[in-house]
Image 1 (cartoon, rainbow, N blue to C red):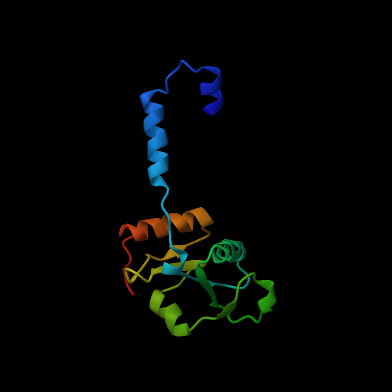
Image 2 (cartoon, one colour):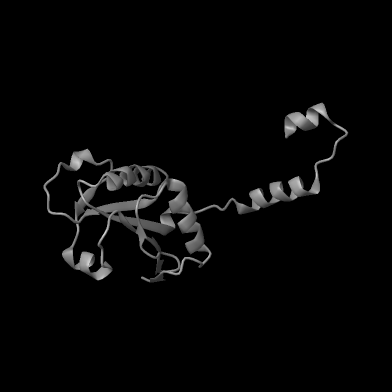
Length: 144
């Protein structure tokens, strides 16, 4: 846009473009990563879970508290995952009705709410969109 205006200084930016620029600036929301906790339940052999580990590692690098719980009983080398992992409590697996993985929950400590269960692989931006909805009170999850 800057290049166009530099070449065409007498041209005005159309109102529709001006509104789009304004909307994009408003849609950028700052998120306090210390306010949220992200927990994923996974199986050690699931390729989608392994891919999701990268998402969690990136979120952890941005300051989010993340944890991963293995629901299967296979032994594993903890070093093979990019974030700390541990065994899931069987009662939690039953409580949440986990039947497919990856199974992720996001908790908002300020509003004391938890997201709806998130199943399947999610990118960093998809998790951040969920966090943004939670921040606005639009995720429809429950109380912690």
